[in-house]
Every structure is written in C-alpha cells, then in structure tokens.
Image 1 (cartoon, rainbow, N blue to C red):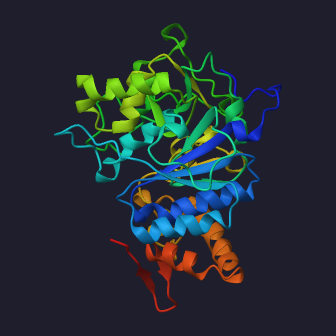
Image 2 (cartoon, helix red, strand yellow):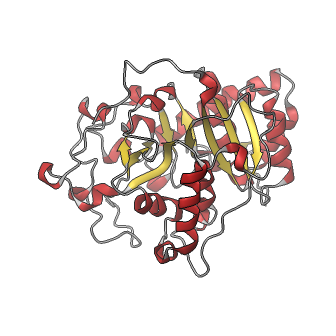
Length: 354
C-alpha cells in the first residue's frame, strides 16, 4: 500500500483545499495554531474553516481577523448536522462531529459562501481536525492514489486499548490493532495487510476520521445524506463521524501513512513505527495541550505521558504569540487566550469562553 506517488503530475493548487470545523470556542487555540503551522510549512492550498451557529461571536470575528493575516484562510458558516435522537456519543466533545461530513459536499452547495471568496471550487479536499498541528508539509497527502473519486484516504484507527478503557469494544487489544505490526521505515508507506490471507483482522477495517481526503460531489453527498437520515445503524454510532465513515466507505478507503495523522499516543503505544522527525501532522487527541502548561516534572496530558508532544505545541504557540504582539494583532491574541490556559506570571490561569 503505497504512500504519496512521487511521480504525481502537477496540479493547480486551487483545485485542492483543506477543510476544518469548529463549533465551540474551546477549540479555537488549536485551530489558530493549525492555520499558522499550515502557513509556516508553506502549504500551496487554501484552508476553509467551517463553523456553525453555536460558535461564539468573538470566535467568528477572530477567524475573520485571521484571514487578513493568513491569505490562504477562508471561513464558511455551515448548518450543523444533528445526531440522531437518543444517540449518546462516547464523549460530549463528539456531539457535533457529524457536521464534519459536510466536507463531502461541494463548497458551493452550502447555504453560505466562503469568505473571502475562493478563486475556484476545489475538486479534492483534505479534512483536518482542529486539534492538529503541522510539523512538515502535508500537501503530499493529496498524491496518495485512490481507485476513483468514490474512495477516500484515511489512517487506520488505533484499537490497542492498552489502558483498558471501559467503553472500548472487547476486540480492541494490541494483537488486533492494525498498527502493532508496523515498524520503521515500512510504516512510512502504510503497509498494513488488507486481506485475511495476509493477516488482516476485522479491526483493520476501522479508520480514524481526524484526517481524510475525498472528492466532494453532489451525487456522493446525496447518497451520504440519505444514509445519515435513513440507515438505522447511524443511531448506534457512538463515534458518530468515524463510525459513519467506517460503514459508508467500507472497502472503499486507502490507508495513509501514520505521519499524516500521527496520534500523540502513538509515540509510546507504537514506538517501533514512530520517529519524531517523520511526523507531518500531529493529532492531539483526548487532553488538549492548550488546556494546561506542561508540569515542572515534564508530565502532561493523557495519563501524564504527553509532556514531550505538548511541549512541541507550546513552543510553537509561544513563537506565534510573539508574532501576534509584534504585528499588533492584540484582539486576535486576546480572543485565543480567552479559551486556553496561560501563565500570568502569578501562576497558571484558565480562561474559558463558556
């Protein structure tokens, strides 16, 4: 299973775009740094940040202000996609994630237009969760071959459940995780068995929805929306968007190397495959680095094991903060800080927008 095609033909950069989604201010710090690091890594493609009516007004204004700092940034209001009645996701933060599926609808099919206007409607998009930071260019993710436009590209879901979380299915264990067999450098080509004859297991069918590449179309969106509204299985999707993509695109997705969606927990759960210097997009799942500074003993995040990767985020943030101050972007900085933990000099203070 190859990674990006090194011989992929050159394309018009405006034919591709990144999409992200924000529905609450608590993700604004992560999103701001996602936009910044995409720009820092000199991405050739626009990023369209979609938001819903639930996003706080000061955050909407902050995003508009950011478009004057980052020329590739566009914003677009979209209508939310509600969870089926009675469905309780694994975590409250997943209550709006079905709205991520709007990435499959052409941008000119949404109720509101992107601002500023795009020069053309992109033919391919890569969705990026708002809790991702870019450390190397991810533009090559578009060059991973797909059989046709009805397929997507995504990274396998990690189903180790090493910490024995009670919500996880019984089959989630290290020996069933598609990432367990991976070793460096083969992991850079996403060499996970695809068939049972090659050692694939049922759990290998699950993907992580934090990063995916697709070809939006009216026809595809129509089929997906019909599935969302009429398939009874949707009512059982406790990881709403992820389970949806698992089922709808079963046997129709191509794996991407972990480097394009490197979950921070992979650093110690899959150390045989992980190399710090290879990471392109770091996905800060579970605890977010902007919720607390790294402790003096170097611990942070999930079960106090994420000090190193959280330090990377804060290092980038500190440089971004200096730039905002230097450029006179005080209103942007103050809005972002409102939704994060900052060090006041008198101790750590959490600023919340709720």
